[in-house]
Amino acid sequence: MKTIVIKNFGGPEVLQLAEMPVPMITNPSQVLVKVRATSINPLDYQIRRGDYESFFDLPIITGHDIAGDIMTVGEAVKQWKPGDKVYYSPRFGSSGGYAEYHLTDESSLSRMPDNISYEEAAAIPLIGGTVWEMLVVRAQLKKGDSILILGGAGGVGTLAIQVAKSLGAFVYTTGQSVLYEELKKLGADVVIDHHKENWIEEIKAHTNGKGVNVIIDTVGGTTLSDSPLALADYGSVVTLVDIPQPQNLINAWEKNATYHFVFTRQSRDELYQITELIENGQVKPVIDSIYPLEEVQKAHQRIEDSKRDRPLLGKIVLTV
Image (cartoon, rainbow, N blue to C red; front, side):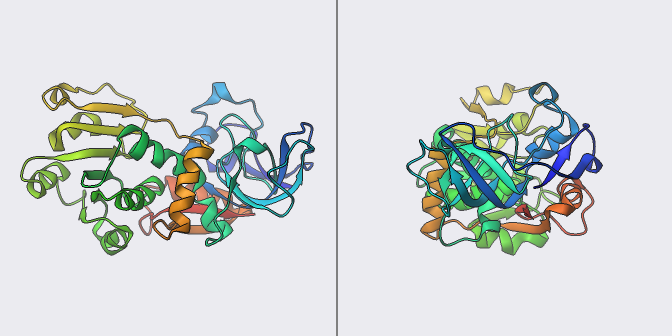
């Protein structure tokens, strides 16, 4: 089978096309999946460049989203059968989806929604669990709340806007002016161009100084220290971004703010909630671009390039 293998940590050039044997079922609870599409996540390039070196032994096949068809099942598998369409996120630390076939335990599988394509399905599993964890489990976002999603054009951001709107929240987000209409279509009530406007002052102006109930951080930088300035009393800040430098949270005290730190979640239970929203038409995967598996280097370059010819909007998908 075709695979993309990482034999050395580094830039996109270390992603190399290789032939490997199709994995065989060795456990009765395992399932072999024909991968139809996968996608690019920041977690994938972080692994590629060696950020999680202690968790992986080289060579590595990365890729944390899979949409495909079940080919064969172990003798203990009763819920699934060959031909079933599934989507899921391979477990962190295991072999990933940049391959023609993937072997996994049945416990990781979710039924793929009938009303989306393989490419659209591949854009959801990892961010689906993450967004549900951030908005519902941690922030406990509810109807009537206000939320600011920093970085609304990214994979997490485009999904978070839609999920927040489905929960009945008033949604603010940041994004470039050229993406204004697209972000509004996703459900953003107010779009703030962070390149031209101060998002803290804009939130204060829109909320008459009250601030928002929830802030979702997908961009990092000084967000943790800045957020209390745009946060309502007893509000929540939820971040999934690494914190390379210490930040002063003194402004959080007077707001009685709650901070949540979320590592990307791979939960079938949380993905089930997103599946329902997709099938109900409340959420639609947003795809930035599609590349064949053989052009994975170009796909990684697009997600990492800070000087893109056009802004990133949604997920980058690989067809297999």
